[in-house]
Image (tube, one colour):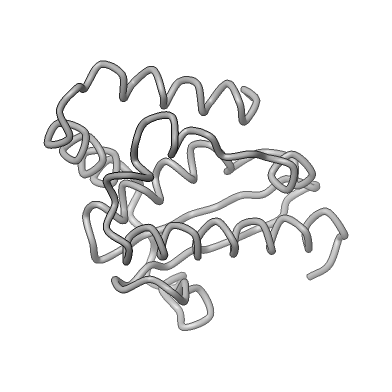
Length: 141
């Protein structure tokens, strides 16, 4: 599996081919639409990400010390943001997830073009993923 930094570099490169923000938003929406749909049994209250204006479900599993994630949202752009986080984090060792410095949001300019609600939701997703990675690394249920 590629490293978290290598995956971030791929995202930065993909976005570099899209100079206009309308194109980048369209690409985010496309990424979200390509995600596997989250099965209904994972759309639980426990999996809802707090802090998002839209509804976001984040299903987390720790398998042999690796973080595995599935997500869905009722917002197309937020679903695309979730797809990016899954690309970077899902399948990675929990320790690597904890140590990761997410630079791709700043390097693609997303940090400047997301509404404050979406940015807050994004941070809430990242916080939940990192908190789960800490439990996974410590072999906690």
